[in-house]
Image (cartoon, rainbow, N blue to C red):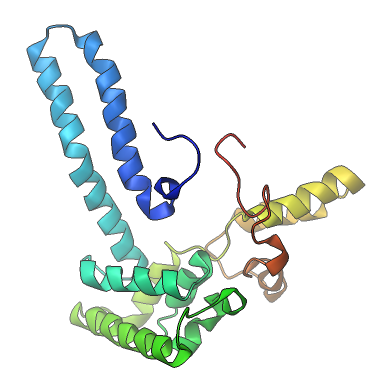
Length: 227
């Protein structure tokens, strides 16, 4: 049922899309069970359990990314809103958060200022970020964990490097157009260890936000499902 484009493909909507797709799969499987009542009931139980099971898994993931033992829905919901309204580079934001910043200025490396960052009065957004960071640090303190331990754990689930499309495009174009595989080999080595800090030289090349010329560029900034 997922055809064309639209917000149903958005990252935060993927769990809902997955549930609907899985239910369609179960519906397609049902005729194979014939009149076996027990099997039909078991399939239905699996289908009904998926939303809660997926929610539990996602909550555990978000808690880990925030350095928390317990998932805090309100804290995460406020963070998600701030991330969207700022807006931020998803990967860089989580990595910067892993250093346990206490003020919004420490998160600015992840902010897309040239793309309408803050979205409203910068002073207001700065204050909102500061308030959220205070709530987050309070939550960390309530769990009684060592700050260094939390930071290390967060960096194990929040990678510093990911294979961004524009990086891959640059690498394969140089390889195919000029026979130069230097970038391909460099990326291969980099992404074999994406959670490590690696060298300052590599960070300067690949721990960066998407450049303005790559925004809204089909095949580089975004791809269709058929791509």
